Image 1 (spheres, rainbow, N blue to C red):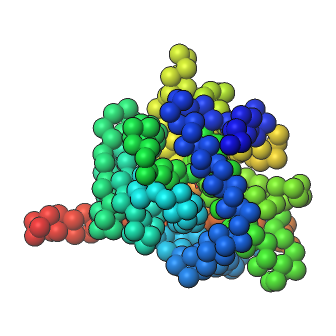
Image 2 (tube, rainbow, N blue to C red):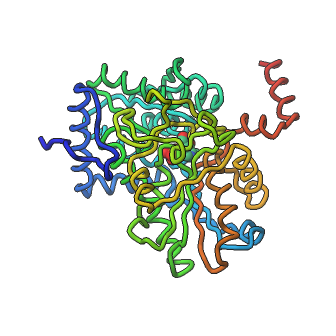
Length: 408
Ligand SMILES: Cc1ncc(COP(=O)(O)O)c(C=O)c1O
């Protein structure tokens, strides 16, 4: 068996810092992934599931009205929200489920923040016949209730995590703990490009289809590739998926947008580029938001999927090498961008994706009209209906909820 030592590093970031009990299952997963990448049969099955189950390729939409309003670069939206289950997460879930099947596992477990990765995991579990358990912070369960409801309808057990900040990082801790005690027959479907090797490499590989589709479609329609790509960054899976194809081409500007939350003070946002320090967290080394004692510090975002203190290691390395820019958008800017996209383009984006849009709206007017700006719309906004209604103070929606409760 090949050893994992020194594998999975991006510069000084990444690796696999795990208790001994997880070394063997991670090695098994790493070997299975390497084998899958050499297998035509695996690749054919993966591509066919993406096409026939998830509905790929997702549309690349010319945002003509937004382009006209902002008066700069021509804006294209890569609509990952058109995927089955409403976000990019289904792509790495399909990939991992196919690997788990080859490993003879019968149960999938996952963590989830916004609930999109949980729904996607529950979906592939139903499709492939796995048992399924999803760990979710109780704060996130409250703010993403529709996704909890659908995970349960899909046959998954949703386990509330009631300690720490009761959000994504606590859900990852709990899923890892469960995995350690239940390794036999169980595959942990980690939902972003974070955690120990091979997860950052594996999920990046699965998600890189996004950038490949952007390139092919733009070449067909514009005869050239993009000048800049903007994507939101929680752990980083939708961002690296859109960026990967273009990393070697230094002319393409890559920008990740972190949660600016409610202000530029530690604890009020999830800006790893501003507040992150080198640390080892949840099995990988990266930029992590910590307090003075090196404990994980609280984060905040209106978007549950961006409310996370660690940064995917490949993104941390790209940022350090100045190949990637990291900026932030606040809760308010994201909600404004959400409203603008709905009205101007007829697209309802997820709150996470609205962060990318908010920055794209700042950037586009500074670019030339002959330049192409692609915004990755990582998911659709259905899951955010309650948060958005509250943020917009939609009284009629409040009345509807009260009436529903009366009739329940
Ligand atoms: C729609 C959407 N976009 C983005 C994210 C952030 O995750 P990542 O940075 O891994 O793409 C999430 C996470 O739940 C999400 O649901």
